[in-house]
Image (cartoon, rainbow, N blue to C red; front, side, top):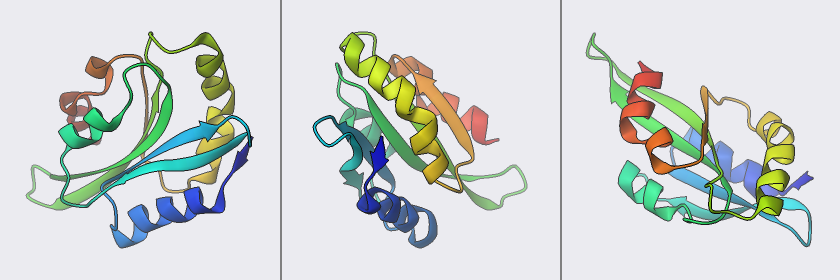
Length: 132
């Protein structure tokens, strides 16, 4: 499984330049390559991000979560989310599961990983709890 240079560069833009709130990646099966499907503007909310994930297909996503600590410090943590809804095709689930670690290694600077099969496994409370 290859990773498009654009995918790596878009992640770096999110990480270093804060150019995106999130990036959603998909596997281009014909090319056997991970490509960028969608990016979210820095002002977009977590709800916008969650709504961008398909109901019945797998995706990888990276989300830049900003929060304030109990000491009143502004912080940011980057989450890698492997989205694999139970309604997606078996072939897609296998493809995404077997390619995940290879793709994940290309993205340096991820703080937390989440594997989600339904929206409750990656809702905002889960993200908040993991970040603190």
